[in-house]
Structures are given as structure tokens and as C-alpha cells.
Image 1 (tube, rainbow, N blue to C red):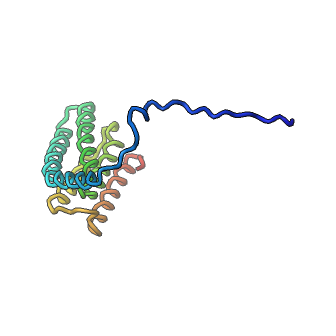
Image 2 (cartoon, rainbow, N blue to C red):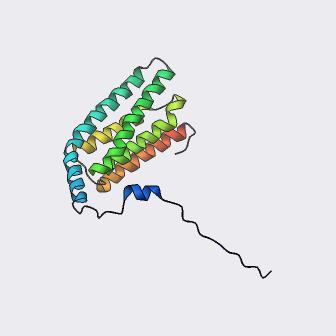
Image 3 (tube, helix red, strand yellow):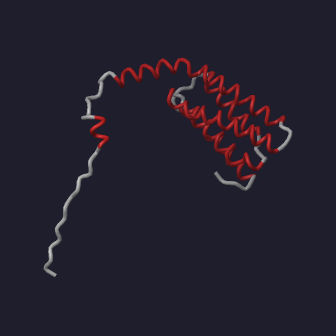
Length: 168
């Protein structure tokens, strides 16, 4: 009962710390240079995303012309990848509205692709919204109009999924 326990703390060797060395002071200009590089890339972003949208529309057109369910599903999955890329880049280049719209399209495709019942009118509405955002250079969240676009597409997707007995 009166026994005391003796403990020994063992510090394992940290070979990574020896290889990396002591912490270095961050280059104060690094963040400034990185932000400048992103700003330079932003000039090209609209061209990149327009190319992606052209490819996305071409894939959706192929879905309509597909011979069977397997071909439609494969083409929709390829369209999903393009929409996912668009989603991933939008906010980085000050187009978060593009990110929201592309995310909505990705969600819809993801939920419906295996059912072979994807409503391509819903996909077309998303692509139209993306084109409008980019052609009008709507940066940021788009204000009240941007929120209406997001809300409208969200409702469209919800109705489409509800029609298929799916939920968001």
C-alpha cells in the first residue's frame, strides 16, 4: 500500500530533427512573392477555366449522344473530373462563386451518375451560370445576385435529387 512507483521518461532519438536542422527564420518576402505569383496566374485563370468549360460542355454533349448506360456513366465521370477541377481553382483566383456552382454540379453528377438518370438540363444550367459569372467577371461572392444564383441551383439540384428519391 505504501509503495511508490518509480517512473523513467525515455526520450526517443529524433533523427528527422538532426537531418532538417534547427528552425530557420522565414523569408519575410516569401509570402509577398507567392501572392504576386498567384496574382500573375489569375490573369490566365479566365482563359484556363473557359477551356475547361468548353471541355465540360463537350462531355455533356457526348452524354446525350452516348449509345448505352455504361458509355453515359463514363462520360459523366469525365465531366465530373473537369467540374471538380473548376471547383478547386475558383476560390484561389477570387472566383468563389465559380467554386460554389461547380461544387453543386459535382454533387449532382456524383449522386446521379450510377442511376443513369442524370438530368442534363440541370448540368446545362450550371454551365450557363459558370459562363455568365466568368463573362461578367463576377469576383468574390457576387453579392445578392450571386447568392440568388447559388440558391437557385441548389434548389434545382435538390428537386432533381428528390425526384429520384435521393437527398443532398
